[in-house]
Image (cartoon, rainbow, N blue to C red; front, side, top):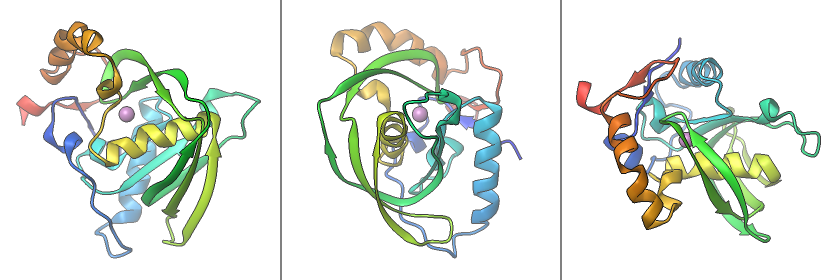
Length: 184
Ligand code: NI
């Protein structure tokens, strides 16, 4: 089932996602719905707060980047924690399904070490780099109540203010369903 994607301005996007265990209600269904929702919106990652759940869960599939320099990565990340980030920061223009039609350069480390649980709740400690690391950092931030626009300069933020306000009022033109904070 395709779920509405929470638009910028909704308080759930600012909550720190709580840890979950295997007893979390209808988890397999939620994950399945998140995949369907993400692909329908042509996203490469989706975090649970973006479908209204303030829990530490996100999914990512980098195959759409089609970059031969990096292996494709498709995974479910539960209760993840970035243990380490390193390397010279690089700029990449990020976007977000909750903040449509805005793209901004964000500077992040190229390498990271992540501790997380998979769908079977097995623990992993795994290194990621390149595009995979970038998507993980963006989605991980969602589970920490953080958005990519938080990283832009004060000046840029002022320039984006009206666009962000418009999104929060449901004015963004998108081809997927959104949940608008003021319409609830
Ligand atoms: Ni996002």
